Length: 400
Image (cartoon, rainbow, N blue to C red):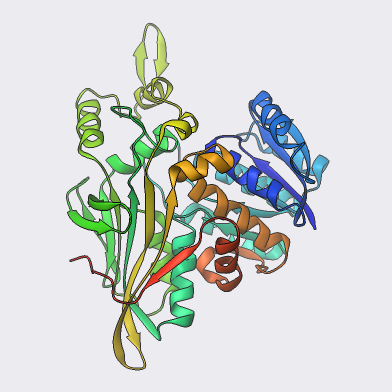
């Protein structure tokens, strides 16, 4: 079918690359590019004897548009799959514009010096991508990503209008460490230590970090404490799902994680403000990232399951209706298949699927779009095929 350039070689990228290699009919060729080429070479060596997909590797600094442009012009991919850091979204989008190449990512841009993430920076590219005749798909992970596809599917098949969405992200896995993060520590800690917020009656309602707590009993995981966070898909769903009155996002955390996080906050280790240390300027959170376990190393020691999905409330044929769409994923099964824990798996699989949607032309809409703006059906079919089968509950317990 075609060729993908995959930028990044961390835990999520490794999953997406494994999945591309399983899907050789679509991904006839891939090029894996990262600042550290040796990581790309090691993954190529591991996979190339198991797949018909032709694998190349390259070194690139994703902060530098000229290097990205040169690599895209050299490789001539059909799509660029951005699995680098959110700080690098705009440089990669600039390079895709310059070369008229389709673009897919999993997380929205955030500036490195400000713990704030929103779509405004990327949505500002809409007209330029449209004029260039290329498609950008934003947020093709799980949340954001599958949660947006779930919302579009629910609206298309189950509701005339959706009024309330609660996104529930439960990780019931245990990696055995007193404190570790399941994805990039810097991004994870910035996200959970920021103020929470939710969308209600046409405006944002801001909360203090971890201020709103609920307890929910998750299928195959059990009862867990979950906390309201700000999350980027709330912003796009509020625009793209008609009739919406409120959208909230909840994520589960264990007490050990919260206790360690509070201690680290209290001593300044989660700060993104540079400090001087022995004559050098360092960012405390970046130093903390360096001493914490690498999320990619958690796979062999993580046991348990994730349960992530959306509870919808709305109307169908004039009657009130509730509906729950979700996925359950087993950490150890993920590790057996692709050598990762389930948090990376649940992001990497939809990243491959998003790139596949663009490569096959099933999602083809010049401009910059979030996943819920496309037909959800082929993506939903692909989730069942490629390792993230979804489940339905027509009488879910609601979150108060």
